[in-house]
Image (cartoon, rainbow, N blue to C red):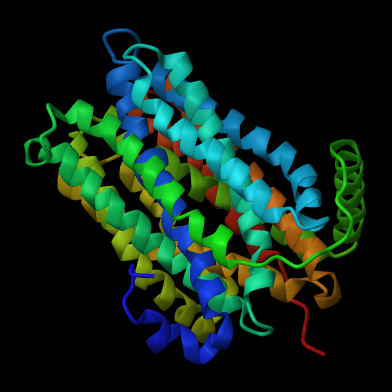
Length: 432
């Protein structure tokens, strides 16, 4: 693997041992698919949608924000309803890599297809983008399920964190190149910035596709139960969901946390997907918006590691609440932005807490649940995560129509305030 010379010898081999090849191959998928979430989902698509497919000469910025938010919500809802079924398929038989490849291929194909969607074709653009989101999220379910296969016993946290860190670096690296393409297209022999954005969509497809190969080549999934058909998977998936839901209802701390998590992580995911579009609606130049997003990406990598240390020092719940409070304050401060420096400052602020809130939420949930039921409970947790980014984009869209573009983001404050308050009601069970 020429991507990180001698890295496996210095960092991977001692704690992972003989499985370092499969661990690196697995983690490189995160390196590859993060380009979609960074370059397309958070970066160029929101701005390009408002400039190329739905310009203000046709509809208002408020209307295009509503459409983009609605499109994100529908895609997330579709994945959420699919999750129990495809999760069951992932748990049955030895077809995880096959389904990972299928969904990844859908995402890669749709990312490339954005290049050919003509200007003004807003509905096809939203449809293609939505299918790409489905491919991205669907593949992640199978990718996550392979963690227990590649990670040696007791090293799951290390391997999971390693994949997460490579995602930050890989997505940020390609995004940096894409930003340079857009800002200086002549350096690459590209006609203009608009063409550079469309070529960036193609570069994501290639990057994602190439770095899907290592996980398919190096990870050996064990033979599991017999494979199930689609009809049986639907029944089994929803039956298991009902069983797990009844078990969760009996554990107050667990269901209270899940309710809080669903609200505040929806706000977090909405900021990731809609912040650039919000800044665009306020009149900031594309270069400012993309530069700020790139800054968030690279601030987030070391900050996520430091946030884990903070959780150990002051307590995980307190550290999460601090992150939620920062998001709430940022939401309010966003209303008063008037200069590029303000957007950059907010980008750094979000980067300091974004990865930490996500990582500590997962570890905190792990301490609330029965150890012997970790698999099914985390399955429910992951499914709930797929429902996140449904309320937020819709709230922003409605807020934009009712209050105006500048105040649309204030609607997310509801998710952070209520989610944070519910989190304070969670009492972690005392260790035996």
